[in-house]
Image: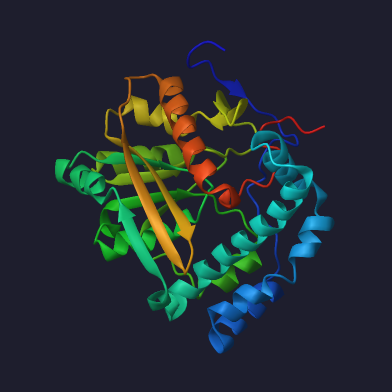
Length: 304
């Protein structure tokens, strides 16, 4: 593919839908357990739905098996065990997203690795771009930012397409009032909001590894095979002439979160170059935290 030549993705098995599974009843149960029995009890409860997702939601399990077996080189048996562990770690992350904002935050510890790069961005007063991915638990980065008083200067770009009843229920616990959020819209209006935020010298954090139907994409190699990535984050970052960081919030043992912020050199208007650097860095993170890959679909477009 020629440099910066984008393709348009149509709806197929390789496309993320933007929606997650779950019911209000399920979330009510977990909130009840967190409040009445503690975080550890909620973690233990996560073992209950895992067999359903492993055995019934076959597309997701198939995508995970491909990831572990073909991209990481695990044996069939090790891949099967890893799928279960992956779902469990994902469940723990969901519990954490609820537990921290409802008052259990003192049960967690945080490590900010590369904080000086964000501080430098803020001191420059020119705005900036943070590019993350669906590994770890980046939504919790807002609590890192709040602890460092970065929250008033950062906007996080998110999709907001979960079921309305789930959003309404969780909204009472996970109020998004610490950080400004920009919602991804199919009419691409969020692009103007991102540009406006940068113009106001704000820092914008955006995911670089998922795209909705019909979005323009670029390809880069990840774990030994080409995959499609959204062109938007990399195009914006290389056109606006602002500092760029790669950031991830990774879960570690004993309820410890490790936020990484890494500085990256960008080439003017070369989205492909920035994507290649992002994919290379993402690969390092995935290899270090293989169970925290949370793209439950045919990411590489290579599943039979």
